[in-house]
Image (cartoon, rainbow over all chains, first blue to last red; front, side, top):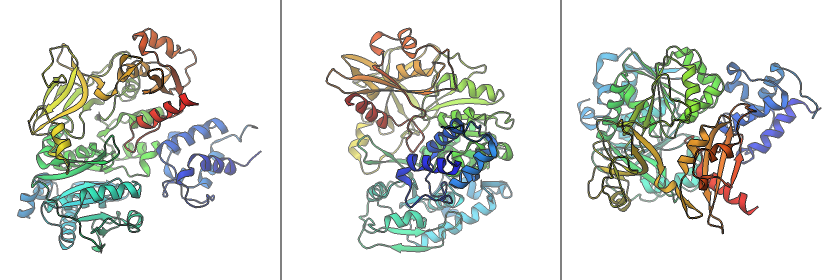
Length: 86
Length: 511
């Protein structure tokens, strides 16, 4: 089973490829650097909810939780169950 | 400050009226300015701009992220009797250069990030006044690049130039006078009773015409303006926190922004929110009903008008709202506009007939910057304060105007004249559809119709969209394909990106 961080990073690399200027690390600033635009964020949340079976409540849908790949992985970990086997 | 009063009717009330000195004028994150502090920041900004060579009648480009610094830059430019041109901070360098070459500004006010993309190949004679957007007053650091920008005089009464990308992709600058902007800002402030008691959001970016209400209707009435900056605006949780914690009373945005918040239950129990205004695209009735159900005591209004006229008609949405199958009127003309429906020869059409929505009066733009031919072609005959919108409308018996689509969205598919908006209105009423966009793509067989749909919730027993269309429209309105997408692509302004979808439709067929 892949760790959450790897799955999130792989998704970001695919979805936001044109806006990623340098290598994507767990600490890359996604919001500050404009890597995640508004549509990407909604798509990302849909992906997280489907893939990991979590629900992102409105109070957690804030920039801090999406600031870096690491922050996103932490959010998923905090919200609930680990991924179902793919 | 008497020269300032003369130079800018648009901002005179906020610079000279002492009544609201201790009142909060603007908030952005943790940063705030009272009206007294705002006046000082604007005066200081004006002094920096004057030292940088800005004179009355000049044009100044402002390219900054949404921030207090961007607001004081705009007000500082106006206070000198110059005109501001707000540019999208995230614009690619190529487009930025093309706008600057068209605008020929005296100065570009921008931050180091945007400047870095321009300085590798700056337009001739460009002068950049560097600032950090978190600072309300530019540092005064002026960078000049060689070459001479040709002098082109702008009209004396010019207040702003708003750029839109024309259909050809070339930048098109819409010139707005002080009168254009004050007539709209004051009408809106009166109609929605904006006062010093209000806390108004600034949702739209400053380069989008909705910001004219946010900035000027608010500040002219001493309301408090809350800027939603570029990072928080994408996060429903952050927007919800602002709406609730600041006790926002008035909100103005495109419908999509409201639909996205509602989908995340971000609009529930916001008791202070007394008025929601929306404009810029059609609000699908079922989605609007969902928003209204979450905010039963809030007043809702549909505002209509292209950037060239700003808002020219408006409709107060009744409560309880319309049924799902009824589309939303764009309402009655605003009193500062004269609205007529005309045929291709410019004659007013008979009652009940569809015609092009034509607007005249003090709200209509001065013209397109440096495009007299395009300006003349947009007028009704030779009337200078008039504009043909390209939108089609029809008066209802009760005097309400209904939007019937775009002249250029009327497409011919296999010989039939099809109004794409009519098809979209039907699809938007489908219970499983959150948003529909229909496009026509050319092919050898006389064109094909493709409907792009984004899903709403998980409705399993919803009827087939095909049956839905068949039951409501003529047979030739049946799309050749229905394509479901998790989200429709968006333009920078948040509207559905029709040209991207047309492109996609064309590719679908050749696959």
